[in-house]
Length: 363
Image: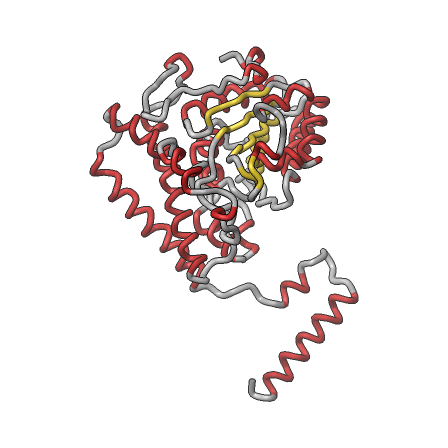
């Protein structure tokens, strides 16, 4: 697949492995080892385990609002696996698979969703930006990193993620425009999971696909089966290589959000079980699992023990967070600005006086 000749206007979705786990395009299999394939699989499984546990904990009142990734594992893991350690991962809030590939520890991920800001604290050598909730804002950040990279004459790439609904935001178009003009080393990944919260993709845009939006900005666009981890990896490898040497690429991962937008959402209000059912056979983990079983890279009796071990590890990580002390309330006043404003100083003093009064009254 020559990226400079790939034409999203033809509306042909790139696929390497079909839903039965069969390789339908052997010429475009990614250049990876059997160990790499196992890493892709275990990372996708770990993402699914974290999702299921986080959802359960949130329903128990032990976790704050959570954004599940179920069904989108290949789109995230396959794309991020193409990055070097020095490349940047720039996420929105639904990129768990990418976070795991880029080395965000499970403890830190859970700490973030638990509501502790220290979950967003990264090691200096971990090139992963914190979660960016304002829709499409992260695309701007990625372009800024790319412009800085060019000015420094470095060869690092920034890979940024967005949902299909984010393509309706101004930041999306501004980012692609700047990237196209300045030839920034940026790979823009659209996770087209079919819904912008409750609004279906067909009501977001009249475009036949989202990859073709690249054409207006003079950059290549690739339309990919986002549930095919091999297609995602091959397309991402080519996109990253092109971005490193030439300039930006837009990649659409055609996938499906199997769960709710977040734990505050009720998807039954805007879609039916009949809408979801066909996508269960397209499950990206099941697809790779079928391939590995057929190729002798995985045994049926390995799967359940592997998942159970992952569940234990994730719960151990969560307990360490739940049993730790919460953030000090004084920090809310101290860290709004580099130096506290007079208003914040006054509010902090009022709070301390309140605590002293409560202690003196034996409360």
